[in-house]
Image 1 (tube, one colour):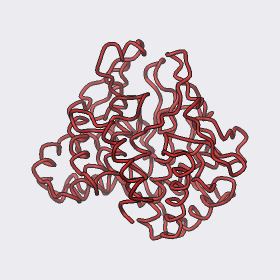
Image 2 (cartoon, one colour):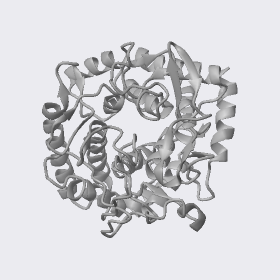
Image 3 (spheres, rainbow, N blue to C red):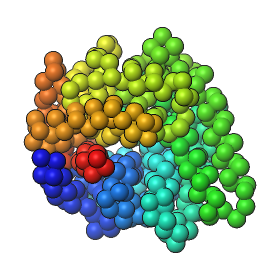
Length: 395
């Protein structure tokens, strides 16, 4: 059965491959280059086809920002959120300038994937080519990603028509009900992992220890500040985010599960995160929900407030394996395989109500305000297909 699923997943992934060798985000919607999506899907594919990661890093390095531009939300060193290459595609969002940089996590993910690619291939020549891009990305984290110098990476849109929320649960509206600048919990883990990845790469590509020492200090300062600010004692879990006043957003979500791979979580908190992720209000037979059923805004069929995203589950799965929680990682793998078997494919997202799975590809409530229409969940999504393929391939 798994071999049959693997073959079908590979066929779908091949349809998303651009001529330049990176993976477009999805089909039929968002058949374009996304920093976050393309990086995560290339990370998922490193053990199968590492050239996808190389090609993804190459094109994102090509478009890395070198200027300050509020319309495109550019800042030096930042990695793009999305690029639509044709005028027809760009006309759907006339208030934007492409490439558009309104995403907070593609920049640390760029560094993380670069280090993962190097670890897998030892491709010295290519890493030398993008070393300045890696340095610039890490400089963005400290210079622009942390404007108030509290060690946390945060976002606030610069273009009033841009994305209001700029993490992976992004939106034009304030669906998360958090006043910017917003410091998302998982982004702090990404930033920590990026600094540590930079330290590893600096051992090979830096002329002296100055960058290694700087990024070590940045990582340590972030880790030391993180637990105090983000730990939710009542839930024995982490808050979703801090708002502009550094007040926590009390929402039980899947986002803290992304911390498991990063190294930012103290040993004593690891077991607590895992235990919370597998409680029945958030874990289902088909995967972990974006938010708990107990959240006041929960809706099993909403785009980001209760549905299940396979890529979200993959990041948690990856962290569980890295942290030695093999039984729990296996539960997520089995849940996504069950979803595939029930639906006949693995989509961008799906819903689960009363233990029953439902496809949202016929009308998920993702809404791009500028297009004035409802966009359905993709039946083919790169980071969903690549995530399940990674689970099958690794085991």
